[in-house]
Length: 118
Image (cartoon, rainbow, N blue to C red; front, side):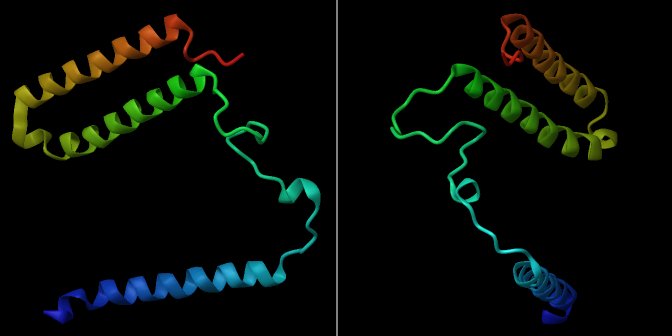
C-alpha cells in the first residue's frame, strides 16, 4: 500500500526541501537594511490605525464580497465543465441560469457604484 503513495511522498519531501532552501538562500543573500518605513505595519493599503475599532469604508467590503462571489463561481464551473458530458442538457441549462443570476448581480453592483473606487 505504501508503494502507491511513495511518489507523492517523494514529491512532498523534495518540494519542502526546495522551498526551505530557496527561502534560506534569499534570506542569507538578501540585503538587511531595515528602516522605519520597512518596519511599519501595512494593512490592506490603508495607513496603520491607532484605534482598532475604527470604521472601514463600506466599499471595501463590497469589493471583498464581489471577489468571494466570483471566486465561488469559478469553483462551481470547474466540476461542471468536467462532468458536462454526463449531466447533459439539464446541467447546461442549470449552469446558464446560475451564470445569468451572477451576471445580473454584477450589473446591479456596477449600477450601484460598488465597483468605482474614488
